[in-house]
Image (cartoon, rainbow, N blue to C red):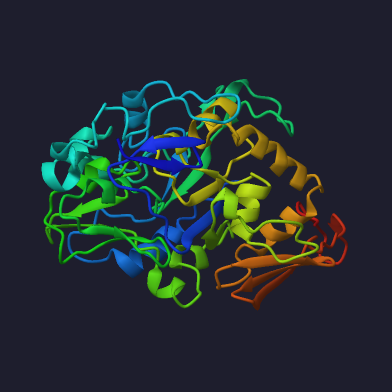
Length: 401
């Protein structure tokens, strides 16, 4: 069977096509500890890309509340249930089956090839979302997990008896995209220059194989137009060096756009001594940013810094076996350690440009796009403390810093 190298799994895996990486790979890091679910990203995307006929149900960007929220309904729970146990070895190698392996499909057999069978999605683990599944974009919003609130009379820095967190989602522009791997035309392709996954709408023949095969359900059918559509990575902006709309408009400053290399080719090092790739640094060097459900096998290129308030077992299921260590690293950053990471995280949202390099210059973090400086922020944000009681106004302040 065709084998491709998936570094997120630590092994080769089966895939319908030969592996071929782009010249550069579009990538992102989202800090989930800062997302406030204001949905500004969702509206920025909606007003830019999905305001036409037949797109009423489409959210190329959406923000879900985990663990109970999902759009479309049950997109992850249903697939995880179908795939069964997701086991990882102690060295971080995935020992379970990906969505391309779970059905036992012989991808070498001509009759199973996507362009021959015209039904490859049935040979990939997954489900076809119905129109009713897209009707509830706010499903589970702000619903807590854990003990009931009535029983809680304490909180501390390490333990949260109740929890939820917000998960913003866009197309992951996967290295081994299931939408492209299942399309019989094929109308879906991965750009050689930057790895963005696009649908050629003029070629699309509405087989809807991509809608079923994509485990993240980010390829969506437009019934009015008779075509499938998806996030385009805001390529008209990224081609000019600018961050996508949902990135630039993020009020919580949680999103960083750039480009990622494989572990073997990563541009990493000590940012106090040299300029390094910020995505590579967070993903490969510090291992604080993790892919979403790497066990699906697509090698997604949107990475998440896990929230520090959620249970480790849940985070491990969602982000892989390194999630617990990522949480500890983030705690260290909050406690004043790892100033290089702190500086880089402060660069997020400080500029409209994509970041292809960063370095530490004294007490400041400096961001670059293709060699040009585009952002500079202090590693330690300045603070001022005011008196709790204001004699002039005769009022007490709740927030004094």
